[in-house]
Every structure is written in structure tokens, then in C-alpha cells.
Amino acid sequence: MYAVLRRWTVRYMRLYSDADGVSRFEDLEVEFAPRTFVPPAPPFDVSEPIGASEYLMIRVPAGWSDAAHPAPARQLMLFMAGSFEVTAGEETRRIGAGDIVLLENTRGPGHGTVALEDTVIAVVRL
Image (cartoon, rainbow, N blue to C red; front, side):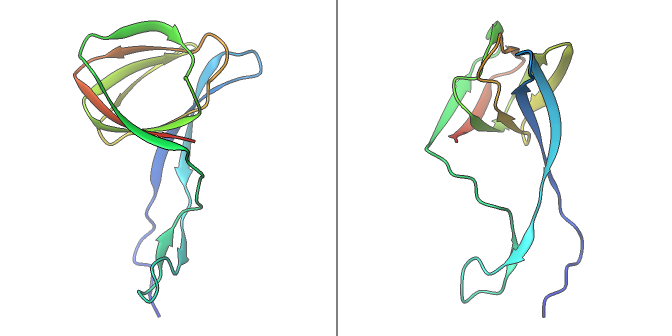
């Protein structure tokens, strides 16, 4: 039998469009449950799967900006290096290496973005 030594959490930001089309942030957490994932190895904590259609990497140079744009697709962005400042509605957040963002604001005016540093992002289209 395997004991859980501590509860691990992975936090991420959701960027979505509210009923009026205004982009908003929401803080969420990945939930894990013990599962046999790679038999015959012992079980470990696994999240629920989410279907994906493609994967790509992007590099955005420092200083790149856009006042407002919706997400081009529902996608998960994993920030590998660098940092962005993102404005959604009236809220602005700094997002950087190690952060995970689920973009779902594919309609409405979108969000504003400024690359504060050269930034590399892994993008998984959902």
C-alpha cells in the first residue's frame, strides 16, 4: 500500500469571456487521484485527461504587444521562459516561467498582452 505523504496542487489561470464578452481571469487547481498509469508500475496521482488536437511552441520577443485580441483557439499555454503582462477586463496580471494559462476567451474583444521579456511558451490546442 502506498501512502500519500502530502497533497500536491497545480494551480493555473483560466482566461475566459463572460456573458457580456468581457475577458476575465479565474484561478483554478488541477485535481489528482491515485491511478495505475503505467502498469505494472505502482499507482501514482494522475489528473483527468483533456483531449488535445495539436502542440506547438512560440517565442515572443520582449516589447511585443497587442492592445486587445481574443485567443485564436481554446488552448493551454505553459510558460517556459520570460514573462508577459496580460490585461483582461479591468485586471492585469504578470504571467511568467512556470505559469499555466487555459485560454478560453475566443470571442469578444479579448485580452491585452505585453511581452516584458523574450518569452517561450508551449501551446497545446484543445
